Image (tube, rainbow, N blue to C red):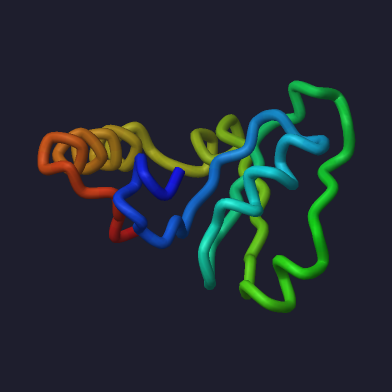
Length: 97
């Protein structure tokens, strides 16, 4: 991963699998990173090493897309999609929201 990212400090991981795979994913993250879980395809519990929270300052979040969509207007959703598309075109990886 270091080679693929040019040694960049990975600050975001998106998890849709859970189980031991997620613990391995967290091991690739740098300091102050965020883990966003939005699924559990493995049907196993999310198991994370305590050391990632203590020594790396990991923050873990849950995200349910259906709920997010219900809480926002169509205009808000479309604006976010435009912003994400523009970031992808520029090659940027951060969102202001």
